[in-house]
Image 1 (cartoon, rainbow, N blue to C red):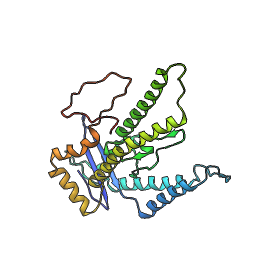
Image 2: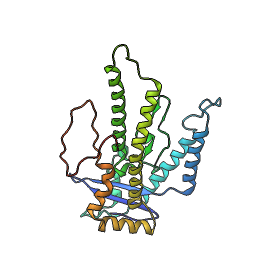
Image 3: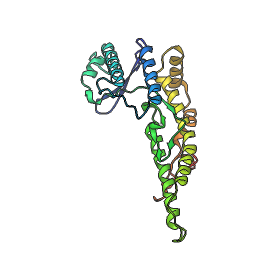
Image 4: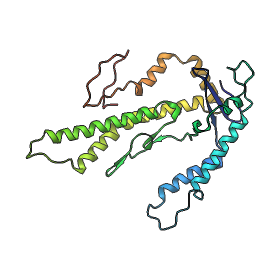
Amino acid sequence: MTAHTLCKQLWLMPLTNYRIAWTLFCHLPEDIVQEYKTMHEQSWHSSLHSTQEKPTTEQSPWHCLSKKIYDRAHATLDNVRSVPIPYSNAGGVFGHLLDKTNPNQISKVTTDQGVYGRWYYHRTVLMGDACHKSLPYGGQGANQAILDAIFLASQLYTMASSTREATTAEATLPTRSDFLAAFELYYRERSSTASVATRGSNWFDHIIGGHGFGSRVLGYWFFQFLPRKLFFLVTDRFFRVRPLLPFLPSVSDTGCISPASFPLC
């Protein structure tokens, strides 16, 4: 169920035990979006060893911006309180559902996403949202982070195993070049699938969170006419990968399609 009001969408999802999950999409004003982008650019160019006194949390620009987004989100929630709930037989509205929701369980997320061009530097390597951020409701954030961890663990295990199997005379600890080579292989193998998953998440955002006539047409076509086989064909590009850690027992195939090879994911 959706409610279009000034570029806002309210989604209600019935759950078990007479519960309803809800999601509200709203588009921030252009001045807040521009401020958010500017602060990101300033963060990249600021010095880590600045001698200037850093402001307290309440005085920091990030705190002020977060307060603006927080106030905007709550104002949007108040604006849709009168939206009727179709699952209610007693004329219930969204305000009743909002009042019964634990405030500590309401997550507010900005929908910025993308795949970064650098995933490692010296001894530091990134995983998950730190190097490829996708929307939380796209279903791929945690999945891709787990694949990152499995790939890195496999590379480090293989590196350690080769050291243990070497003779005493030849045994040497992994060098910096060995680690950098493992990180580079990790980036090459994982960035392609992470990019596909992020693009799919962005496409899904246009369907359920986009505004404008084009997004509405796309959403209607997706939910009414998209063949299930076509949906599976698209999502199999990043869903069918089933990696296994080399130090754990193998698992037999039980799915309807064969899993893709790993680490070529």
